[in-house]
Image 1 (cartoon, rainbow, N blue to C red):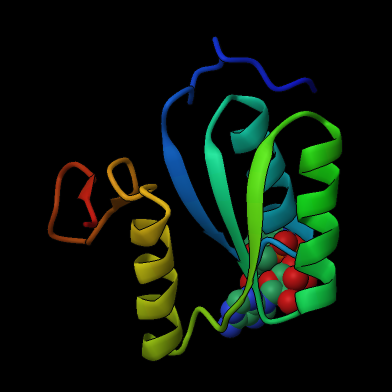
Image 2 (cartoon, rainbow, N blue to C red; image 1 turned 90 degrees about the vertical axis):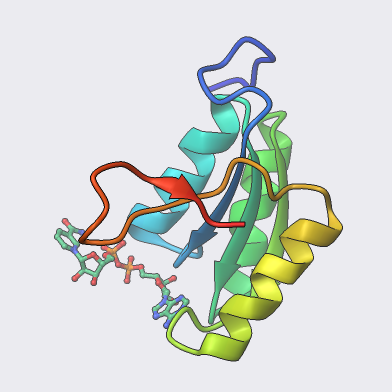
Length: 105
Ligand SMILES: NC(=O)c1ccc[n+]([C@@H]2O[C@H](COP(=O)([O-])OP(=O)(O)OC[C@H]3O[C@@H](n4cnc5c(N)ncnc54)[C@H](O)[C@@H]3O)[C@@H](O)[C@H]2O)c1
Protein backbone atom coordinates (compact mmCIF):
# COMPACT_ATOMS: atom_id res chain seq x y z
CA UNK A 1 0.00 0.00 0.00
CA UNK A 2 1.63 3.23 -1.09
CA UNK A 3 1.83 6.20 1.25
CA UNK A 4 -0.13 9.22 0.07
CA UNK A 5 -0.37 12.80 1.23
CA UNK A 6 -4.11 12.40 0.70
CA UNK A 7 -4.42 9.43 3.08
CA UNK A 8 -6.96 9.43 5.86
CA UNK A 9 -4.22 10.09 8.43
CA UNK A 10 -2.28 12.72 6.50
CA UNK A 11 -0.78 15.25 8.88
CA UNK A 12 -1.37 13.04 11.92
CA UNK A 13 1.08 11.32 14.23
CA UNK A 14 0.95 7.98 16.00
CA UNK A 15 2.92 6.04 18.57
CA UNK A 16 2.31 2.33 17.98
CA UNK A 17 3.47 -0.12 20.65
CA UNK A 18 4.06 -3.78 19.90
CA UNK A 19 4.92 -2.65 16.39
CA UNK A 20 7.51 -5.36 15.80
CA UNK A 21 5.00 -8.05 14.85
CA UNK A 22 1.41 -9.03 14.24
CA UNK A 23 -1.34 -6.52 14.93
CA UNK A 24 1.08 -3.76 16.00
CA UNK A 25 3.18 -4.09 12.86
CA UNK A 26 0.10 -4.17 10.65
CA UNK A 27 -1.28 -1.11 12.44
CA UNK A 28 1.98 0.81 12.04
CA UNK A 29 2.11 -0.05 8.35
CA UNK A 30 -1.53 0.88 7.79
CA UNK A 31 -1.22 4.18 9.67
CA UNK A 32 1.89 5.08 7.67
CA UNK A 33 0.25 4.06 4.40
CA UNK A 34 -2.60 6.41 5.28
CA UNK A 35 -0.14 9.27 5.72
CA UNK A 36 0.61 9.29 9.47
CA UNK A 37 4.12 9.69 10.79
CA UNK A 38 4.68 6.67 13.03
CA UNK A 39 6.90 6.17 16.06
CA UNK A 40 6.99 2.38 16.10
CA UNK A 41 7.91 0.86 19.47
CA UNK A 42 8.59 -2.68 20.60
CA UNK A 43 10.66 -4.54 23.17
CA UNK A 44 12.24 -6.35 20.22
CA UNK A 45 14.56 -3.80 18.59
CA UNK A 46 15.35 -6.00 15.60
CA UNK A 47 11.71 -6.66 14.83
CA UNK A 48 10.65 -3.03 15.07
CA UNK A 49 13.56 -1.98 12.86
CA UNK A 50 12.20 -4.41 10.26
CA UNK A 51 8.78 -2.77 10.55
CA UNK A 52 10.26 0.67 9.99
CA UNK A 53 12.28 -0.59 7.03
CA UNK A 54 9.13 -1.99 5.47
CA UNK A 55 7.30 1.29 6.02
CA UNK A 56 10.16 3.31 4.53
CA UNK A 57 10.37 0.99 1.55
CA UNK A 58 6.66 1.57 0.94
CA UNK A 59 7.17 5.33 1.03
CA UNK A 60 5.96 5.98 4.56
CA UNK A 61 7.53 7.87 7.45
CA UNK A 62 8.46 6.04 10.64
CA UNK A 63 11.09 5.78 13.34
CA UNK A 64 11.87 2.80 15.55
CA UNK A 65 12.06 2.79 19.35
CA UNK A 66 12.98 -0.03 21.71
CA UNK A 67 10.50 0.32 24.55
CA UNK A 68 8.36 -1.70 26.94
CA UNK A 69 4.77 -0.47 26.83
CA UNK A 70 4.31 -1.78 30.38
CA UNK A 71 7.06 0.39 31.82
CA UNK A 72 5.98 3.91 32.73
CA UNK A 73 9.43 5.40 32.21
CA UNK A 74 9.64 3.86 28.74
CA UNK A 75 6.24 5.27 27.79
CA UNK A 76 7.23 8.70 29.07
CA UNK A 77 10.38 8.49 26.99
CA UNK A 78 8.34 7.62 23.90
CA UNK A 79 6.08 10.61 24.45
CA UNK A 80 9.07 12.88 25.02
CA UNK A 81 10.65 11.60 21.83
CA UNK A 82 7.47 12.22 19.88
CA UNK A 83 7.32 15.72 21.33
CA UNK A 84 10.92 16.30 20.33
CA UNK A 85 10.03 15.32 16.80
CA UNK A 86 7.09 17.67 16.82
CA UNK A 87 4.85 14.65 16.42
CA UNK A 88 2.73 15.16 19.50
CA UNK A 89 -0.40 16.95 18.45
CA UNK A 90 -2.45 14.08 17.07
CA UNK A 91 -1.78 11.25 19.46
CA UNK A 92 -4.98 10.07 21.06
CA UNK A 93 -5.75 8.13 24.17
CA UNK A 94 -8.95 6.69 25.50
CA UNK A 95 -9.79 6.01 29.09
CA UNK A 96 -12.76 4.02 30.25
CA UNK A 97 -14.50 7.06 31.67
CA UNK A 98 -14.03 9.13 28.54
CA UNK A 99 -16.67 9.05 25.85
CA UNK A 100 -14.26 10.28 23.20
CA UNK A 101 -10.49 9.98 22.78
CA UNK A 102 -8.60 13.12 23.76
CA UNK A 103 -5.13 14.31 22.84
CA UNK A 104 -2.61 12.63 25.11
CA UNK A 105 -0.22 15.55 25.05
N1 LIG B 1 -3.61 -12.22 16.52
C1 LIG B 1 -4.90 -12.29 16.86
O1 LIG B 1 -5.77 -12.73 16.10
C2 LIG B 1 -5.35 -11.77 18.20
C3 LIG B 1 -6.70 -11.76 18.50
C4 LIG B 1 -7.12 -11.23 19.71
C5 LIG B 1 -6.19 -10.76 20.62
N2 LIG B 1 -4.87 -10.81 20.32
C6 LIG B 1 -3.94 -10.27 21.29
O2 LIG B 1 -3.36 -9.08 20.74
C7 LIG B 1 -2.00 -8.99 21.19
C8 LIG B 1 -1.09 -8.89 19.98
O3 LIG B 1 -1.26 -10.02 19.16
P1 LIG B 1 -0.31 -10.29 17.95
O4 LIG B 1 -0.85 -11.46 17.21
O5 LIG B 1 -0.08 -9.02 17.20
O6 LIG B 1 1.03 -10.73 18.72
P2 LIG B 1 2.54 -10.81 18.22
O7 LIG B 1 3.22 -11.71 19.19
O8 LIG B 1 2.65 -11.09 16.77
O9 LIG B 1 3.08 -9.31 18.40
C9 LIG B 1 3.24 -8.74 19.63
C10 LIG B 1 4.39 -7.73 19.55
O10 LIG B 1 4.39 -6.98 20.75
C11 LIG B 1 5.69 -6.92 21.26
N3 LIG B 1 5.58 -6.74 22.69
C12 LIG B 1 5.21 -7.65 23.61
N4 LIG B 1 5.19 -7.09 24.83
C13 LIG B 1 5.54 -5.80 24.66
C14 LIG B 1 5.68 -4.71 25.55
N5 LIG B 1 5.46 -4.84 26.86
N6 LIG B 1 6.02 -3.50 25.05
C15 LIG B 1 6.26 -3.34 23.73
N7 LIG B 1 6.14 -4.34 22.84
C16 LIG B 1 5.77 -5.56 23.30
C17 LIG B 1 6.36 -8.21 20.85
O11 LIG B 1 7.77 -8.10 20.84
C18 LIG B 1 5.77 -8.40 19.45
O12 LIG B 1 6.55 -7.74 18.48
C19 LIG B 1 -1.72 -10.21 22.02
O13 LIG B 1 -1.92 -9.89 23.39
C20 LIG B 1 -2.76 -11.20 21.57
O14 LIG B 1 -3.08 -12.13 22.57
C21 LIG B 1 -4.43 -11.29 19.12
